[in-house]
Length: 197
Image (cartoon, rainbow, N blue to C red; front, top):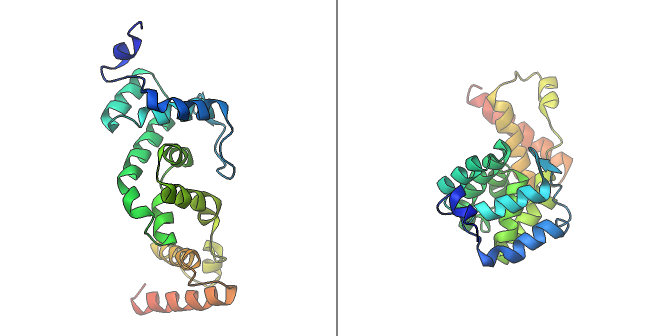
């Protein structure tokens, strides 16, 4: 009534359709298994989620301008940018292999993923996001950098190549036992050696 929203930014409004989601964010516990941070910068988790779900209603440029005007934390601005980028890739996410989906989702702060989860009407997508946070992001190969060093491999970019390939194999079900991981590791090292790495 005082016109404060338009004074903050010309496009800033209070969309009535967002009320149920903001009520949920501000008054209910987050869904279990998400392991969300308690704070984002100087904001509580609930405040940060409320701003994220609100500002995701706007084009990124407007959302960032509003964030700057309100002096919101840089972490929130980064989460907002990551969420907008993720929203562009969502149509392909549900049909992707677990390893491909995980590679994309690993780059997005979990608080941004949760905001997308709250806003999305797509049940299949919500299921994919829940599977990622509860299962896929916790999948890692038994092999790590120390293992590779003990095998007399020199550290370098090929470490990431090997470890990423092993993780992808676990995620996609191509590897299900330690012995299978060891066999794949040997094949990857042989392949790299034949390519002069």
